[in-house]
Amino acid sequence: MKRIFLLLIVCSISLITSCSNTKENTNHLKEDKDILTTSINESEKYQDQLNQKIMELKKQIEIKEKEKELFSVISNLSRDFVNAHTSGNKEKLKSMISGDLFLEDKDNKLYINNHANDQWLLFPYNGQQLDDWLIQGFEYHNESNTYRVHIREFYKNVEGELRNPPTFLNLTFKFHNNEWKITSLSFDI
Image (tube, rainbow, N blue to C red; front, side, top):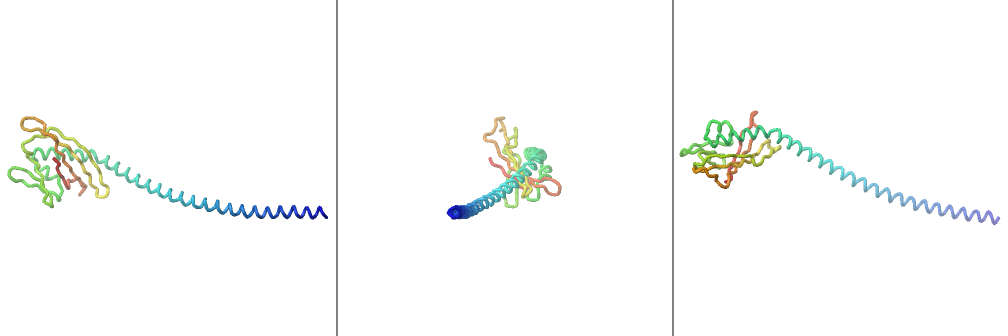
């Protein structure tokens, strides 16, 4: 009987310990579940952020590819404009500008105006001759389908000396009726 009683006590202790361990294990498992759920939620947020970043990078790649694709066309048009404005070729200039701009011939000088009454002298450029030019920068704007070009023009005076500093010409092209037209321009001297 003592043996049975002892066996019952040992079994009872084991059963109580086992139940107690099960309760602790259950609590521990619930805590682990909560930690994992939080971790999954944070991972999903991070994944969403990464997906957003990927979409932004894809858009930037598309814009850069378009910018690269159009560069030769726009640089040739820029060259044509520089040649036309430094030689006073009115017909060529008229064919290159949009309805946002208009030419004005006043006092043997050729000006280009916009409808906001900004006016820029195109020719003759204070008796100076174009020596060289280069494209200083460019960018394509996808939202407005415009291409902006920054050109540095180097002029020589009557004595053949380079004028310092060079002139900066900014041209904005927009695709309209199957051709690129200049919609705005400015000089920074």
